[in-house]
Image 1 (tube, rainbow, N blue to C red):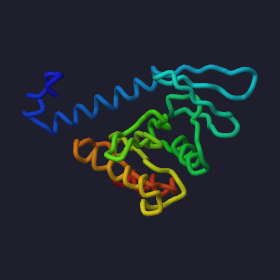
Image 2 (image 1 turned 90 degrees about the vertical axis):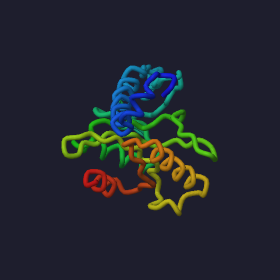
Image 3 (image 1 turned 180 degrees about the horizontal axis):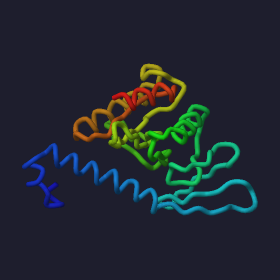
Image 4 (image 1 turned 60 degrees about the vertical axis):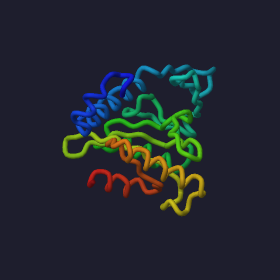
Length: 188
C-alpha cells in the first residue's frame, strides 16, 4: 500500500478499498487470462499446446482429457480426472457460471508449509452480481479429513490467508459432487 501511494485511501475506508481492489483484480485476471494464451497445433495429431503466461505449455489429447469450452479463456479445458471432467462439463453447461478456468500448475498460494495450487477459479452470478470462487479440491474425497495431512493443512492455510486479507474470493473444497457445490454456491 505504501508503494502504490494508496495507504490514505485504505485508512479512510478499508472495506470500500478492499471491495474496489477485489473488482480490479477480478477484471485484470480475466484480461490476463484472455491476453496470455497462444494456441499451436502440434503435427497432424489431435492435440494442441497452449502457451500460457510464462511460456509453460499445457498438452492435451482433445478426445481423451479435454472438453471444448465457450466459457473458459481457452478453446478447450484440460482435466486430470473423472471428477474434474464432471466439474468442467457442469461449469460449461450452467448459465450461472460466467467464466471458469482450470488453474495452471504455476498458480500458487503461499502457505507456511509450502505452496498450494487450487484446481479451478470461476465466476458465478448470483442475484445479478458476480462472485469469484476457487474450488480447491475436485478429488474423490468429500471432506478435508480424507485428504493427505499436508494437503489438508495447505487448504486450511489458504482459507485463512484470504480471510485475513478480507477478500470476497471464496475457497471451497474438497469437492467431489459438482451438483452439491453449485447448489451451495448459488444459495450462499
